Length: 235
Image 1: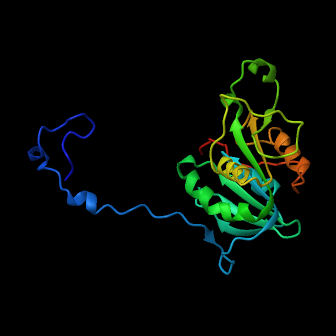
Image 2 (image 1 turned 60 degrees about the horizontal axis):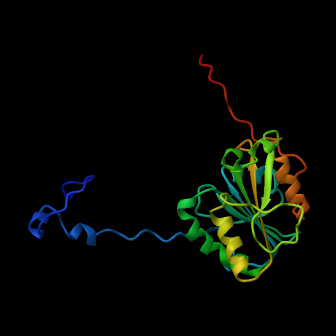
């Protein structure tokens, strides 16, 4: 049985009016299960070090990563955010996290990935956002651009990209890891890319690919999105 008056302000004048509420209901509520990384069978669950830890986060980010970054890599574990996962490229020593945007659990997921960020020599984070989210008094100057690229704080040495200005901001796991590395005074390069199409197509993906290549990340020269059945014909 639930308390009367749900969905409206109904303040009782005394506890006598709470007779219809069962106090045991609140005691029986189970705490939310703690999020955990789901490791592949036989995979070592101890955090591993890397030359570079790359985190790419945004709507349909895993789809782009599978098509451009995750060839010849080993999946270490699933990350509890939709289709997100963590991979290792043993030949380059790069650790890669493909992160679907899930702001409801981003704090917990950040905590799960901090041990990997702590052991990494360098960290690169890229947040993908739709171009319509970008705020600027000079927004018209970007109307013909495929993407808008900005750095976000961090301690990177790249001076060719201007820093993101308020009221724009990033949130999520990538932002959390970048913030943690900055607080620990550890090297981190953090970027946000506002693109005119999500999920990324071959054209919209090019600025992302160019940034990855500039930062020394092995990836495909060209992104080919997975084919989707868009036919609505009925026989």
